[in-house]
Length: 373
Ligand SMILES: NC(=O)c1ccc[n+]([C@@H]2O[C@H](COP(=O)([O-])OP(=O)(O)OC[C@H]3O[C@@H](n4cnc5c(N)ncnc54)[C@H](O)[C@@H]3O)[C@@H](O)[C@H]2O)c1
Ligand SMILES: [Fe+2]
Image (cartoon, rainbow, N blue to C red; front, side, top):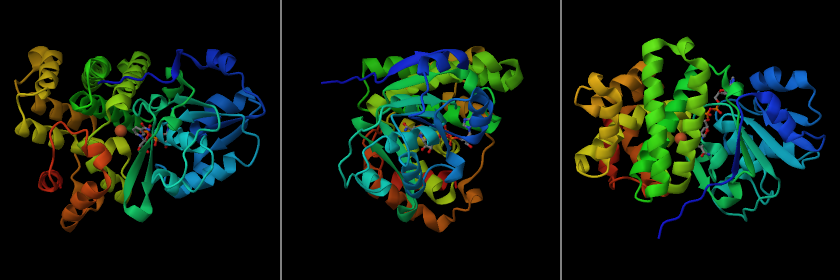
């Protein structure tokens, strides 16, 4: 039996002004965001709600400790509704903070306490990647475990998602690229997940098509040639990918990237970019005749006359152009840590490994780390 959920309702608008009218901010609401967005889109408008910024509590992607501090601050005053405006870091924290506070963030991520939604939540993504606005997933680095953990429970669904590409126009190019590669990984891992079926495939295939086409334009023409429609298309594709993987899960690319991200503070999309080709080439070696051929055919079709006939090589060249290659040792990871990371993945990421196209053993995982070390 197959399941497909499309939660929450999605509001789509090109510009911020209609969002303001739609959202009707009140003094009992809390806006949770980041400084660049506060300055550009909130401060000047004299929104009556409390505004809380992520940077006042932590930097980089969220840890359980940072979430605890934000949880306390947001709940210290009136909080009839939370409106989170930001990238995946902000959206994920908001999803946890909207829960009833039954324990610490670590206890929530380890499912040691009751998990129940308490505060209505609106999520407004401003990067082009995580799809977090439509998933029932939140992710945090857990320093005490040396990795990241994801929590997937329906209490994390927002009540409403708003896609407003204008908010992403000031996105630093590095964040634009890494978050959009994350969206590509979501779509590719979702498509090959054993839990996928005709409905998520509709979204994952279209997301891959948009992302790969826009990436090729971006590399060929440079960002300035494409900004307004580039951002809009990437944001929509990221949302499609979120709908897809929210239903199927993601797999080994994410699972293997978590110890690297958690230990060496590598941004999520950048870490995924490092593992993408190595994982998919391993899959290709294990079962070249299965569904992976559909992705190869899609790449070949999009590359058209530029295709080399080697889709994985073509994709690798594209990813290298978007984000120059960097071996894992350059992040500080020693060779001696490969077996430790492979063991951590097996011990902590079974939720994700269950979504792999073909099962990967600890030896496969260690070989993937070695190949890009
Ligand atoms: N819940 C999910 O389903 C899911 C899926 C994938 C990733 N994630 C999580 O999302 C996080 C990564 O999110 P991300 O890639 O969106 O990056 P991010 O939220 O960490 O943001 C990266 C940087 O960009 C800045 N920024 C964001 N939007 C901006 C804008 N419009 N203008 C200027 N600056 C802006 C932020 O302040 C930050 O400095 C990770 O923690 C990852 O684990 C969650
Ligand atoms: Fe991701």
